[in-house]
Image (cartoon, rainbow, N blue to C red; front, side):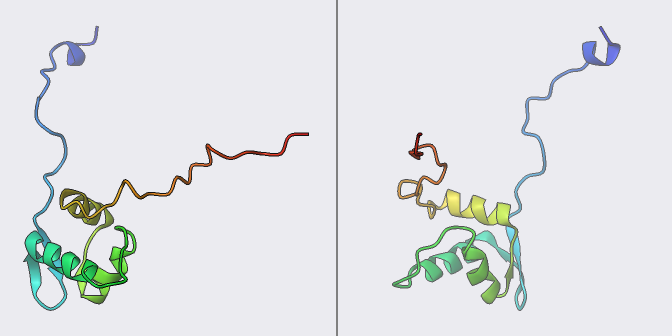
Length: 100
């Protein structure tokens, strides 16, 4: 057995960086995550807008936010804006092909 594997002590904490709590806004500078959540709620409160995290990029860019897709997904998942029960299954598992 190699010495570096034998003497290694495992760390029981989460790996990676902690998620940031601030987002860059073009006019206001760094704003907190709560302001971004309020902005997302106001966008989704319109009558005919029901979108996921990918299309939300366009709406947030129009409002001068610079936000990463991973952060946007995390925010929408934490605030339960993602509608997982109404998703369309696009995997192709239920397809029926013609057999000769």
